[in-house]
Length: 78
Picture 1 (cartoon, one colour):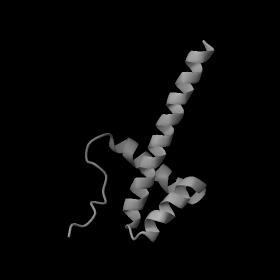
Picture 2: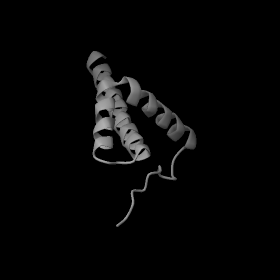
Picture 3: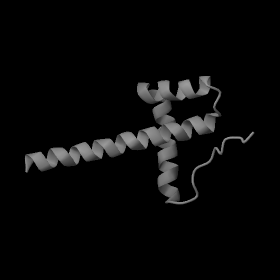
């Protein structure tokens, strides 16, 4: 049986990955949506680091969605 690969991909900017990891650690503590997602993963038996990385992906998808909706609002305004 394979264990989970609980590390980030080696491609991409190290600074951005560090920032995203730190932001997801804060979001796990204070954002209620990310917090419930994280706690749900822990209840399923996932390792803590993997749960934080999954939370960081969820946070990144939310950030991208906010950027896209902001761009749409700008197009409608101008």
